[in-house]
Length: 82
View 1 (cartoon, rainbow, N blue to C red):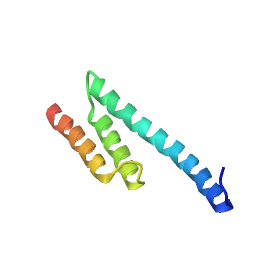
View 2 (cartoon, rainbow, N blue to C red):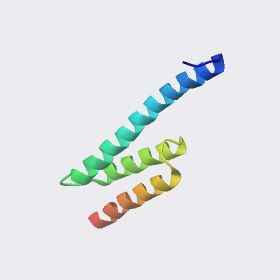
View 3 (cartoon, rainbow, N blue to C red):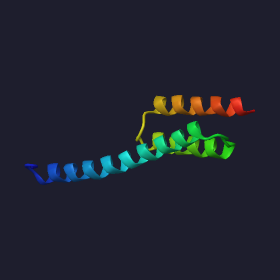
View 4 (cartoon, one colour):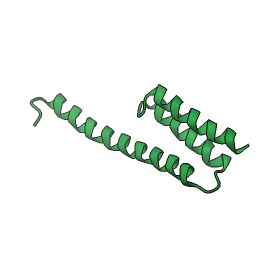
């Protein structure tokens, strides 16, 4: 239980933000798993995943370096298709 109004507000904000961040991370994991397990990967799938990773990094959901690492792996898979 928060002792002040501002601490209560911060607690509520933290709950909302953590729920949103959790849903974004789950969405990213789902996209990456679909690409990894797909019998035929399409460039559109990979580009959509890269775009979602960029948005998550821009909003601070995942770290910038983690986003770059994930995108590099997806780009490597894209280059392997060609």
